[in-house]
Length: 115
Image: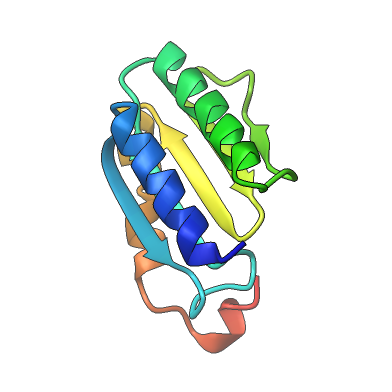
């Protein structure tokens, strides 16, 4: 399945399930770990867990079967590994602390882009 289609499905699923401040970052020029990183906030630990589980179900429904959730024991962060897309779901304070948007939006020297 085309990565841009899956990206739209992820963004729509997060939006329709009340995720806040959804941001997509194109990683193709920064790293080889994924094509996109999507970052969103949830309102509580239960909301974060629900968002991650709903995303996995939606991705599987669309043929993206090798996805998994990292951070299952964390109450303030979840990561959905959708192979070509990494989805970070944060509690707002943790999101502000880690500030991934700033880190991954800045231009990196080519030698550091090979992470």
